[in-house]
Image 1: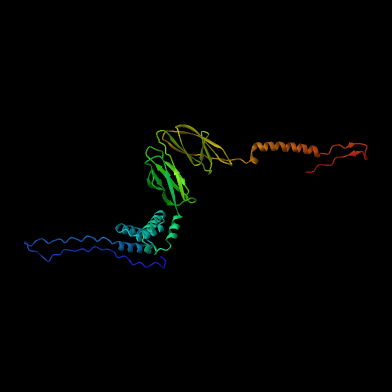
Image 2: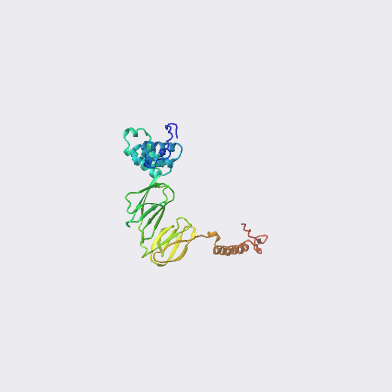
Length: 324
């Protein structure tokens, strides 16, 4: 903890006092039975004491324990100061969307004198907000489960965009019984908000084809119809379909897939690098023919023939040799 933070006192453990019944030797037969003294109920911890426990846990870097203590204290007495402390614990646990919500609630609920004790609150909120993105999931299908990062965030229609930490790989799934599950992989490292519109289709009438390629950005066509860039998905009628994938610098590739109703079929289409022009067999065949012809012509042009005779002394004219 920074030097400006006050020292935290150690939290005292709560113990239960137990009373034991004693007997004073043998009792006469006519004596009434000894009364059993009931144990007193354990005293509930006070919010201030829970806060001290949380502060002590923060000072010893036990952030999960601190968060639990602050949350328990806030349930007993919702003091704004506990919101700020809770936000700090969440921030240090890298639960940034929840930390941002706690800081924002603290800003709304805290009185001016308490806000004055946190002069850099706006900067703190801004730093956390810069690391948090939002995803808005929109669909016409009601009652679909929305799962982001493996955690269910609600059922459609979602009232508000979902806050989450800005990561490069964010997986969003939309699920509903009787419908194909839709999956989207998003990159929130470069954008702060995404609006995702999805329309799940029923399984009893369609199949879902997922086309992937190891070549990033490869174009996908199904039955000569452009689908988009790989990875792509398309809802198709059951039956046979032609899948074509193309990319600059690669030879086009085509496969045939057969889909059944309700099926979810992933396929990966491999692409072969395009053969450079200077390596193609037909080019070298043509070049070979040209080379052979050139050699013949070169020999014809560079071979000195018999000298001609004429009227100019000494009676011979010779053409000069061509040089290469």
